[in-house]
Length: 318
Image (spheres, rainbow, N blue to C red):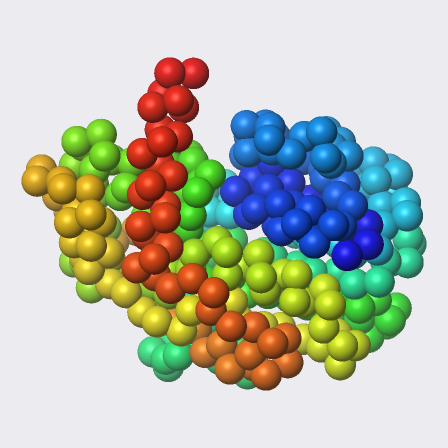
């Protein structure tokens, strides 16, 4: 690959994409304000990237960062439904205003393609499964609204300015480097870390809530494919998942067995803004991006547990 810019590079997903680009001998520039990202996530690649401390809402900083960039992977966000419900104004700035600032910088710089981290939250609580890109957006939470609005901005920039854009709707990503102590982390990271430490995990609802839990390697693959796909994909939206639903209780049971946890399980009421069921139809990504699932759920869970077993003691020591 040529020169890429990754927003939110110190985050779980951004740092993983950076490693994927470096493996393909690409040149990486990354920006992050470290509000949710961690420098530890890029420690091992810091000498191989051009890292810049910057905020995506700063138009001047973005203009400077985007010079001589070919591809953009826009990952910077406050990726949390509960946080957006508690603070819709505070999350709107990074999630939507930041996206517009980055899009405008990309347009002015003449980048070849802009890949956007969209969200499966766009589908809302529709009973239709699996979720298909042709379904009308029905966002519930402020986070979902912000992410869908970003998709519309991408479509506008594609049609009005001719900017090559691709939106990838992520489905519940998990894997190494996802911080289990963060309020932004996914449920699997919390399950694994809590059970490894002998703490009782919590399930919100009755345990039948289901998700298309997607291991991080699949997301990295989808992003790299989206950057290299033919021009006919510009302006389009693609689901990124594995096409398999797993209930929260089933995920808990599988992790419990793998880590030999024999403690309690806590139950709490469903949270506002949470969606009951979600699973992706990935046929469009397969057909147009050449996307395929590279790591299934069970394998991903085992890899993630192995990583946490090694890394958690180090993190706690620091």
